[in-house]
Length: 120
Ligand SMILES: [Zn+2]
Image (tube, rainbow, N blue to C red; front, side, top):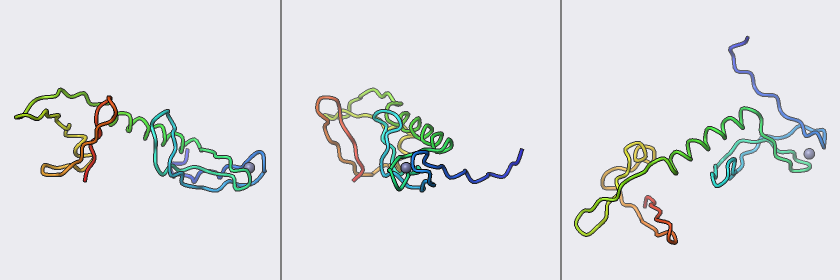
């Protein structure tokens, strides 16, 4: 078996019988509600059909899993400090998002579900 990584074969559109072009999808939901950005894919220029190679699909799967972990993976207890309720940001998450002490964030309520915190 060759150890060198061989460039994947460019997929063909079966319908139009022509090579597909590599594109970058700005948004793609590989799994429901897991929106990935800048997803590599192939597209047929004639009919617009989108195709993912095996490694592209694998990549999406990994990214979806990672996203899911960051979206749902941390359960925190609300504590209290003075009159404010406090939620600790897990170390891994802070590192991933490059949030440090002193960082200003904006808190947005989200219907009755909870809140969204965004870096300013
Ligand atoms: Zn086509």
